[in-house]
Image (cartoon, rainbow, N blue to C red; front, side, top):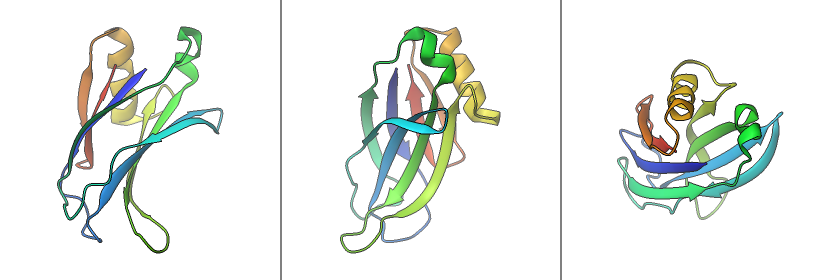
Length: 122
């Protein structure tokens, strides 16, 4: 499974140092996590970063991908700006994105998710 974080747009104004964390979940437990670089002083960051995860085909229907945009803080806790879920247990656009990806193996399927970020799932 390859998750591409392409860009975000019109993020909430905070300290403006956003990054994205991708978590693979199964049965409510986190299996793996990865994150993008921090983009300084922007509400419209461009990432174009891809993250690959080794998932057995028979496990794909059980995986839920949580994608969270955070505002990086040097001191204190990083603030969550927004979060979406993509996977067979997701709803709405997150479920449609996952279904489109499964129906088109080895082809990247890019989709904007609620004006937060553009991600591609392969």
